[in-house]
Image (tube, rainbow, N blue to C red; front, side, top):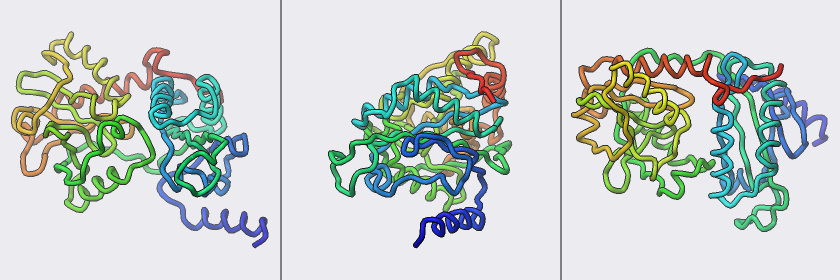
Length: 322
């Protein structure tokens, strides 16, 4: 097949199979630049991230022309790369600059910026020894109909085995357990599955953290030592101190959470993540949480994180130079 024909078919495929997201810009270290043509947003099939899962990723939200918690997410992808034995294609400042430039080229003012570090292309072997060009990719996308979770949701206890801590604490592209957990929940009419760790304590959801408001009126999150340390969850822990000072919460803590405590000793339960922000849970398996209604603390935390995204300090908001 001629190259021009392949390109035309890539374009036609994009036009004929549009999803619920618009892909606005992509950076690829393979071609060393940014494209705004969705048909050109491709990566080599021999990239080990594709056929061996040897890659890591992260995401930053774009809110009203600012990148939210960019530095926190860049720091995390670099940590993940180290745990995955991936040498980043660029140093931290260059990665950061490329991400801001990609966001700028997209002209997106509200959306998401997702990016990946990989050992790169080379061959189809298991070992990355034949890969001599680490790669970096970034994509800005926007939901055509942004999800709005105004109602409380149901979750189930996932039967899919949780990742061992070494892999759960690394944000890698190996998301098959996460996908299967999400599918299992949807098949049972729930929003997500909740994982328990090897000791039976509450761990996390497939791509979000879990939090509770106890009957003692404390905000409680599971320890991060065996699960991914969520940037949004950590920010929520900081912002929640304001509710303590206002007398709306008695305290904020991180610790082991038993299923019994989560289900029956909680007045509120919520999921927390960059894609959902703060989402109230009103039912876990057959157990109604609290009084079965969305709680005031979840709403207050949602308001705080949205306010932070729109007018927070420079440490969490990086302006995009359009």
